[in-house]
Length: 391
Ligand SMILES: [Zn+2]
Image (cartoon, rainbow, N blue to C red; front, side, top):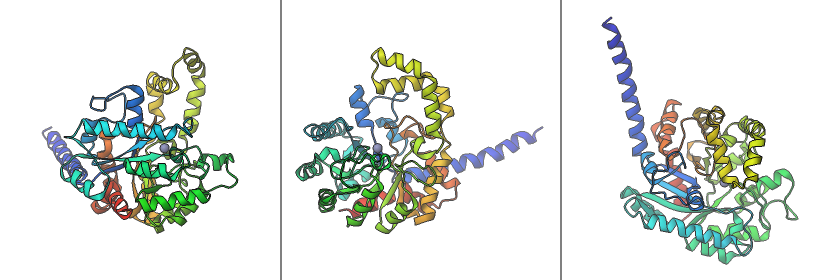
């Protein structure tokens, strides 16, 4: 009988030691996330990122620290309802919010616009805060607005969101054959936008863009491009994901694909499950809608009410590692990173409940057999390289 405690001891101690090693590597590494929507979430819902927002959002300041996040690109975003005369101003207001949030938290956050500021923020162990504009519609077909966004701190522009611009077609429109322009891809003005971004030292983000726009942009860009939040098409065939030819082209370009944590881009069965869930509860959502509940509140409310159903739809974390693995096998470990899309997604893999859970990715990569060197590249080293290469 005395053997049992000894066996337990021998089993538990190595497990604790191994967990500590993984954690140590995580907190020693530079961890970068190239896409987080919390700015829109907190400003729309009147919340403070300084508060404990567990259970309400994926992100808050204390949880960034807990997750060992060193670099965060905050998404500057408005949807297709904003256009000429409104989208650029909306982007500026979101940038004001980032500046205000960082301004009132100087002990924990620092605005970063170039590699030397990044170095300073990392040295001072503050969250390095960058801005990325998600959607070309925010330049309102005006290169001066592009310059202004750069001057205000935008370090990438996602050429399109789901909506095409007059100069670039989106993945959604290319797939549905609803491109509003005479041709798919970039027109002459779109090509000028990419060239100007290179001159400005602003990263060209090819997440959300249509395949033709992707090929046009990558052939023009003289700097490494980034996919700030995209996954692998051959594992999960949705138009937002990148096919193997696109992945190989990003490798040749020296660029970076940052894996999105959205269950619908990781798991090919998720969107079907979600559709069935929504159909099952259609009557309830309709009555809430007619009672005047806002659509973003509605989704949240339904997902909380039916939490166990939602929980059962989440894929395992290992599937996210499969996406990383696929890219590494195609083009090596120098071209993959993390672009969570936290606070812009309603479902993520089990065990990834918010920014506090980034260490789980490090553990999963080590368990998959990745070397410490490659783990460090994937966590953030690759982003730092591409950021510098764009300067
Ligand atoms: Zn997005």
